[in-house]
Length: 199
Image (cartoon, rainbow, N blue to C red; front, side, top):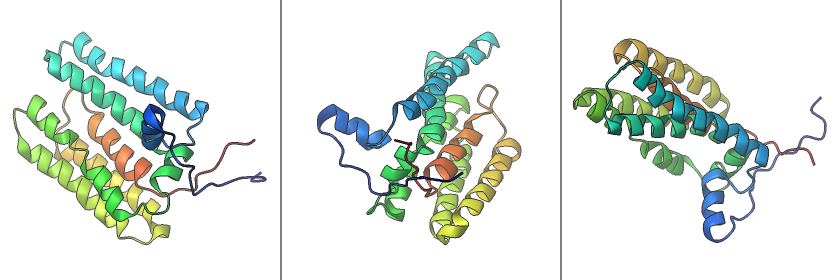
């Protein structure tokens, strides 16, 4: 076991045109297996989230149904794709440091839409959920590499407690904060060895 394992830290250059945009999002080394492993659960989640609300009579607006589907697709795919070797190789390539990681994570203002569409503008939800995300990100990035994984998982557990006991879960969106933090603090942020498929 562990024989002939290859690790690729430097990705190839992205292709040009639309294929290049694809490469810059998923990583230029994305394999067919990685793609299907990520896309199928994402589609299922995008269907399941609004279907649950509809069949349980949650009386969501069309915008709530659409945003729930979009978030379920994005976050489920984000957990899986960001954990792939292709993404690890691309997003942790030479030249990508703490500034780039913080920029990527800070762009995820999903809790803002949750507060607006589901909580009638309860901005404390956004401040607490998003503030914890940024604080946890900075703490992980400032920690020595060998401690980042256990710290990230510790902070993820804190995020679970936050989502379940501090910020009241929203019916139909109980999954939101756990998957949100899993995508960003664990799947994306951690630098992992990008193992390559066998030839």
